[in-house]
Amino acid sequence: MYKLHYSPGNANLTPHMMLKAIGVDYELILVDRASNAHKSPEYLKLNPAGRIPVLVDGDFTLPETAAICLYLADKHPEAELAPALNTEKRAVLYRWLMYFTNTIQTEVLMFYYPDRYTADGSEEAAANVKAAAAERLGEMLTIVDEAMGTSGPYMLGEKLSLLDFYLFMLCRWCRLIENKPRSFSNLDAFIRQMEVNPAVIGAFETEGIAQPWT
Ligand SMILES: N[C@@H](CCC(=O)N[C@@H](CS)C(=O)NCC(=O)O)C(=O)O
Image (cartoon, rainbow, N blue to C red; front, side, top):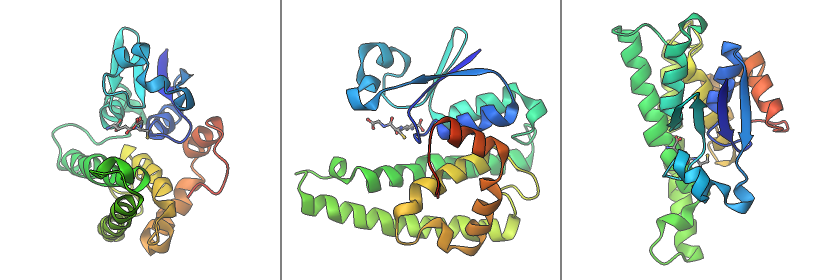
């Protein structure tokens, strides 16, 4: 059975929604961030980066959210959460997955942990980093909103894919910025349809995340 090391609302949300969508058995293992369990020697053996989530599949241990998503999609092709290999659609999936994980997600970290990105850790410097991150996130969401307007109703068009679960997680994380996802018309429509997706509801409820989610 899969084991997903998680903390409510963290990056585990996307693989968690995928596990629900796939309909496979899994066990959730809570990583207690309050006691810094993600920096414990035991957890660092699973992920030396000390980040959440980690997926364990038998003897195989896999950190990094995007890698976990691709692994699950490829292992369960019947769930059709990614287009076939060697297709243009698959390449488009890679394009947006990379944008989500290495650009938007990284910027989200700057928004929530701005002090980590300052040399002196001062409140003033952190406030500047946070404000700049919020502005850049607004620009990034504009790009995604326009793409959604062209391809919609999902990132890859008519068919739901792992990208949509990833994007929904990012929409939740970006709910506190001024230009929040709900203020973009295509993203707002996207959020409305994802909010009633049983896999989304199942994962958010299991993690104990109260409404409003975005
Ligand atoms: N690139 C990693 C980043 C994961 C990540 O930053 N997770 C956050 C929770 S959402 C975390 O573990 N933060 C703990 C920390 O920064 O110390 C991934 O996508 O899995």
